[in-house]
Image 1: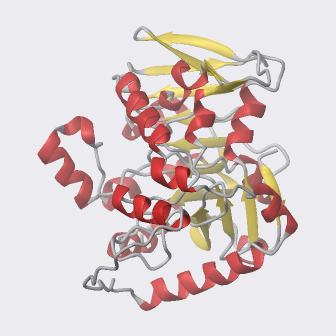
Image 2 (image 1 turned 180 degrees about the horizontal axis):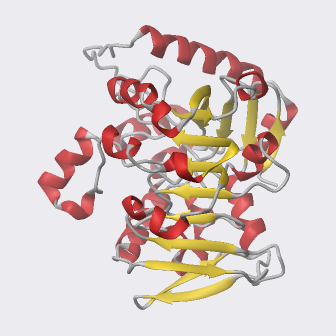
Length: 371
């Protein structure tokens, strides 16, 4: 189970354990005590996200060295009333969660001055290496791995691990009905490529391989989601922080025949349980992401908790979201049919669809790292 604790207002997830359970603790592969898988290194987040200079300053302070204080112009990040309300709610739930024994046990690591000085350099190096290795263009695929054991598939001279009972489709989402027409899903999860000015600037400056193809709200809402929903279905959407984009999107949810029933928050923390960035950060990065929970069933408004805070250590790979399968199934049918759109990693028992559908299943991440 990836769920360490589940309360009325908060949940603790262990993404690393989820991967181990589904890929290595099923009797497949040798996971001996003196070996770690490379993906485990990506979850070894010991300190918050810092600039190297900031990290060095904290390391020196922990060693008792005097640091000359420099006056800096304080930056004030403009926040909307909605932002303030959300952050206050998340901080209140987080404060209560930190008092629980499950939290103290899960996030018991105490970072040293050396940890701050290294500033998660191993994660950054691993992420860079993985990005280089996995940067391939996949062909159009529509295949299934129905075996209950782990499978290996070679695609474009690269090997990928396949979890049990999974269907994986590599194609443009606009071609959705050509693959799943006639199917009905109880749960659909998606992480759309929202329009993003920062990504656009990076692509212009460094090339398209530093970004991804983005979609306007109108194109996302034009997807034929309503045609593949079961009578009592959930649609879960990872959000952008752009308020105007999200307002336009929520107002258009009726095109899918669903309505918003809840907003959840993924709070990202280090191994020591500290938020990866300050809650009110001048550089604009927040330690949490939003999820919208939409439904075509009126009763879900009362049945699904609003404001749920999901706490976990994030992967070092950009936009690698935590597994929600065990959590979402609590609010669905006993054996729901599940689909993930814009997918980059495979989930057992799901239909997974996206142009990078198996990227995070690249064999590089599952090789042993001898300690």
